[in-house]
Amino acid sequence: MSHDHAIDLSVTWLGQTMPGCLYNASGVWCREEDELEVLLASDAAAVISKSATLAPRDGNPEPRYCRTAMGSINSMGLPNRGFDYYLDYARRYRYGSGKPLFLSLSGLSLDDNCAMLRRLAEEGLPAVPEINLSCPNVPGKPQLGYDFAATAEALGAFDAAYSGLYGVKLPPYFDPAHFAAMAEILNRHPRLAFVTCINSIGNGLVVDIDSEAVVIKPKDGLGGLGGDYVLPTALANVREFYRLLPGKDVVGCGGVKSGREAFMHILAGARAVQVGTCLYHEGPGAFARIAGELAALMRVKGYRRLDDFRGRLRTL
Ligand code: RRO
Image (cartoon, helix red, strand yellow):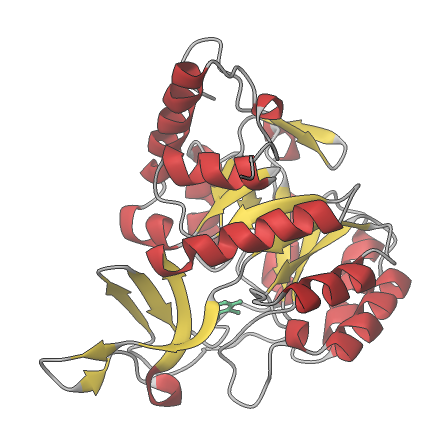
């Protein structure tokens, strides 16, 4: 995958080796089958679909995404084609490409999440669920990952509904007590193989001085932040869960726009790295560019593979 000779960006996890370490963050370039196919044909090392609900959804009123100087704010509201659409895509996916397919699931209730997991289990497909515990944008639905008791109950139900390996997409946490409490819950579930850190920082507010107005329509302008705003928070979450979840993988997501941020995420402990805001703005060509930059940085530092530096962040 890397064009830098003798630099190996491949990642072995979930019982397979994928050709690189970068793929899309769920929600970006992955709602429609033609978008998923363009991702598969790009230098992305895996593909994840838009968070699915049982029934299709149009999402929140527009404008619901805004690019800013420092990243993005969104309140999409879970627009998606519905679980059956992504399940049907998973039936036809080219697993032989060596690029894993992840299905993001974001049911509006625990029963809905379990129903989707049972359907996936019945089909026996190699697609791996990433269950979204952190959508910040459905009015009246708090982020599950901020309710520890509800998360504990949900994981127990996921274990009963699904017999394979799965992962969860977590919201950002901001306090060591919360990292510890969530890790203790996650560690009770051996088939929870990975956590993806982080979803957008929920319910930020971007203000436009010229118009003296908010920049997105839903929720009076509140929305999830991505891009430069979130990089340090994402790295803190990757680092802390890497330390607190031995035997599980952490997927880094947040603020990756060049090889430098990808390197930071891996140094903090990330097994693989997702790209959201940058992919939205640049398109799937971002994967080849970022992979090339990461490989060049590794060459300068004398690293040949990701295992040479993963998790080896130094403290002072
Ligand atoms: O669709 C969205 O509004 C959305 C979701 Br489900 C999510 O998990 N994270 C986000 O920033 N937006």
